[in-house]
Image: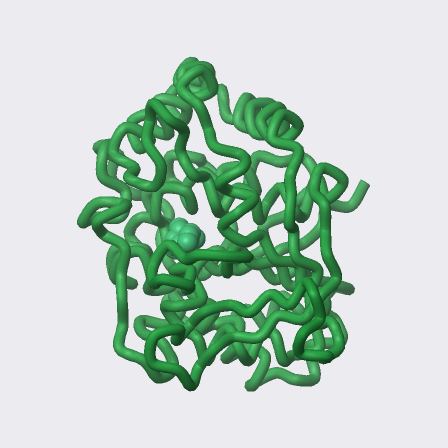
Length: 306
Ligand code: RIB
Ligand code: CA
């Protein structure tokens, strides 16, 4: 069966590192292109981390560097969560798989979309490059099967009082994505909070050889949740949303991004009660069956054992 082509915009980042493994080792996805972007840490670090990960995973999708900063706002980062390098906790072998410097991320996205019948765009970092692609290649949008993003929150944020990091890192880009008219699915903070990775799962993954050991060591340094009380694998939920939509409760609703306020800049207004009386522009995951996610997470990462 033909695998589903995807393009991954990512800011590794510890939960990104796991999400990239889940996408690359799944049986159903073909990762055509990975575009590291600024976010958790600088573009220099997310690019270097992408090269290290693909070298360890021994997988060779094209890597093309994305944006180094947001469209308008000043850059933010999450090094306090992921460490200064963005992947503290493991000494990676020197990379042997490198970024293609002959193209920009949006040119490479356009090339993939032209070649494929339909492509899924996946954003698990700031949405800057998805927004630039939408503005520079509007003729390509008919060939985008779906945009799937990790971002936003039904309630409180993890970066601001009401803002989640990915959308807060580039609110204007997030607004462009939600105004694109392309079918969108969203994994907000809450489904990651419902499906924390517990120590017994981490211990099982540790047994999966060199990749499992790497993931386990990153878990020990990751500061979103806690190793003992459960780790927030937010980006992994976006990959699950592509491959296992049946384990989620989805709400078709309006998502608006606040870009004109002082204290709520970057907040996602997920209008489940239709207060805004605006047409739906996304399917938002409001609940997930945590046990089914955990089993899929374990089974897919088991495929990394050499
Ligand atoms: O808010 C969680 C998101 O911000 C995740 O994508 C994590 O990697 C960070 O980028
Ligand atoms: Ca991320």
